[in-house]
Amino acid sequence: MAVQELKQTTLEQNQVSADAFAEKLLGILNGGALAMMISIGHRTGLFDTMAALPPSTSEQIAEAAGLNERYVREWLGAVVTGRIVNYDFVNGMYHLPPEHAALLTRAASPNNLAVTMQFMSLLGEVEDQVVESFRRGGGVPYSAYSRFHEVMAEESAQTVLAALLDSILPLARGVVESLRVGIEVLDIGCGRGRALNMLAETFPQSTFTGYDFSEEAIAAARIEAERKELKNVRFEVRDVTTLDERGRYDLITAFDAIHDQAQPALVLLSIANALRDTGTFLMQDIAGSSFLHKNLYHPVGPFSYTISCMHCMTVSLAQGGEGLGTMWGEEKARQMLVEAGFNSVEMKQLPHDFLNYYYIAKKK
Image 1 (cartoon, rainbow, N blue to C red):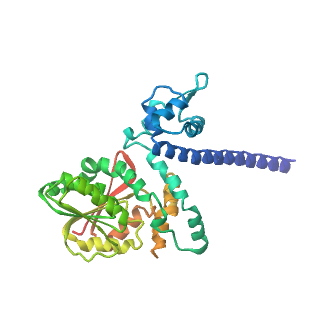
Image 2: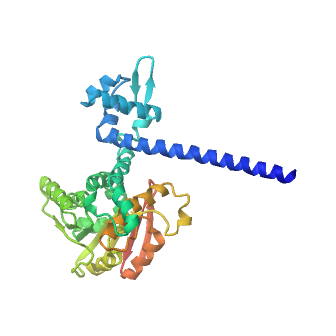
Image 3: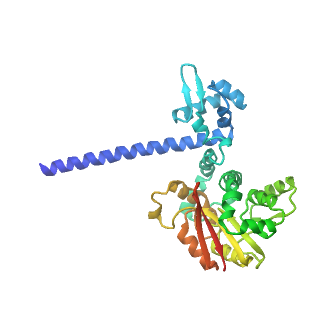
């Protein structure tokens, strides 16, 4: 009898566990759907529009946003049932609470999480190609991601630009003062060049160079530099795997750019060679450990590994690279920096930024 009771208890416990997991899966399903709706709410400006409106009907919201009412109404159905927007069913009125607007509107930047939600639909575009890579190996090239540089520029505006002058640069002792006097600066994987253009505008005595292998990104960087009439910055389409420059730069930066390189070790070695002996390499990269078990409670662990699988790792493999991945982690980063020739490596964090580590590396 005791054995039978034990079996019954085990079955009941298994069922409780199965029910809990089923509930978790439903939460994931709804969360994934809401991520897409939040992305659409950002891209269409619906959150910005609703933040400025009193409780309104779907017709009023659609008119204010300049959008089709039928689509707006269906979108509202998703965000109301997702508890993002409040709904007064008696009067047919919708309202975006201010505490939600504080995390979903452009005015809320750098705290606008709707920007990051865009990655879900962006990565969905290449799911078929990633699945094929699971079967055949290789990877998915950058060219397959239609809006990658656009979304990354917007994301970087929040994580890098917003904190660059007041928080990030001061992490490297003496860099701000040197920039004011005038030094040579290189940004690796500069993308659309928003960070470099900001630096060039702020420190006119210094000279800035940006390298990226994306022609579309470099074209956008040049357009912005021309619009701002900047004469101390240049952008070049270039593969940074090997740089034929030695001892030229006083400061080299890389913002979220090293881990998805085809040959990151060679890039770091080239950076060390291109840096003057007294220069500084400032590298921002994703916070985390190189060891999976140490990332079990990472606040965005699943998201980070997903971004790696669906983008950072696969674009490296598509180039015949090593596929280092987003979550290469602090331990691996330190090891590779030392192997590249940096004898001094500090890792620092900003109080408001749990997503990134900032490495200050020097040869001497």
